[in-house]
Image 1: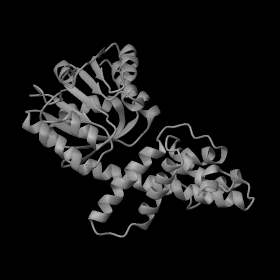
Image 2: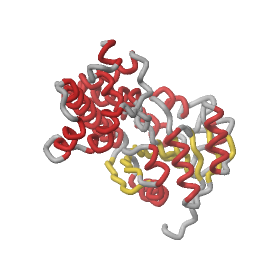
Image 3: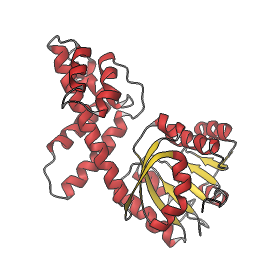
Image 4: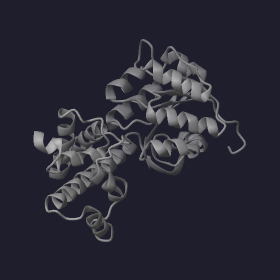
Length: 302
């Protein structure tokens, strides 16, 4: 396999993540044939960066490459690109491999895998546990499910985009793992925002408080990535609150379906829903601190 020629690649969805993944693969010597996005300007920009052509239909995307990487916004969009009729990626899809990277419900990933198989193609769910910077420099953490032989066939391409891969097994399982990962991350983010918000209200020195957190059981990866941003109200978007809300609800639904009590997940989802209600859902997830600091607009509007 190591001496096999690199497969050609096309992309559906070239927003911040997809566009950076496309540039990364170009840098690694992959031929990015076409890009497709419902936002024409995003497609044009990505095409200019990668030398790809802008596809005018989903069928053209499938025809253009061996591997089609999809990064779409929600379940509805995923069902649309894998529709059984109309303009769809499944047109003449025999032998193609679809690498589906969006964080969506496990059920929609399973439907995509089944639809691809029916069309004579293969689909892997390849969930990304990282953000924009990692997409560009090829250090994504990827969680992969689907046919293991297809995973191994596609491994060199996936390794070009990632620092680490975890194969979880049957279709739907990677989406389950990713939902739970994001649920815990979002709970940690909300908890940190409350701790810093209370510390601020008490008049504590927040850099000192963050240092204490970092050296004790309150330490977390979220503290490292978001703590200073929460203090300084620097909410440049790497993972938006709107995405955090979506992912929190996916995980909560899995818990509810299992008949479990999940008060922390439910409360966190409501906090991110509140950000959307206040019109700040496009801030980074660190913006949840806008709800917990007494002097900030989210607290005042609550």
